[in-house]
Image (cartoon, rainbow, N blue to C red; front, side, top):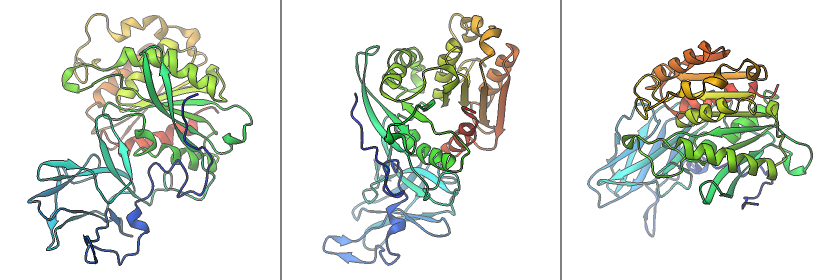
Length: 394
């Protein structure tokens, strides 16, 4: 067995699924501001989330000459928000009101990128760590007084890749009682993320907790594996498709089915992913339609299907040609209960999604496709998970 964090659910604000706790700044008295001095200099609270959803970010850097705030999804800051310096050397900027949700951010101080030293909440990505702030006010992903599941960091040995790997696994409320089996949902991340991302910035554990508590979704085990198998950059033109698919098929699924109380049959398996994870989903599900009754693609499709995008134009036989036998197999489609796509109209992969949906429909697939507002951001992907999960295992 791989190492696991404790899986005993406790109160909502301290349970293990709180890999993305609400900002500690929101829990401190309003009087704690940078104007209060201690023996080591001014006390700095950051981030500070106000009741009107304005968020103030601060960093103590008295010798710095410039500081900016950067954020992957924070609306309206573009390449960065300039911060102003107080007489005590505290740099500060206030943004908002900001839509409820989780947001990654960091500081750039005199050309050096740093996380927020006053904020213990972080979110891992593919090649770096971000600080994380949560702005409350979302009914479907807030931390609520409902039964909570648990998220474990699981280490396993990949025989396909010949090294140890990590994945995150959500188990629903009452799983720890040791009774019964559950359906399993594999949820894949994007190119600039890692296996931590869905449960931190993606709020996946809290989204499932709230759906299950409202009886909108079935209790399920949700597996969030690491999609990268080596160094990656879009400029290099290499997407780690084949290696991850081998790891998934030969190591991840067998590990989950051996070590968790899950059903190992088609009606109880689902898979979905965002961006790169959406492409992974298609490369796993279509060749194995006999194993998955549900699959979802968020902000993605077959890379290269339009002759551009990540990976460029395909070399050799196209993805469609390689998978023609399964695409045209009417018997396999009989047990397929849901093919679900969603992409924002401002997303740079919207044409890829449209072309992929058209291709699947040409081969007789009944595809649900939601074109939503928004771009290639976690703001959309959390919404997509909230819409997709209730449709599983019914």
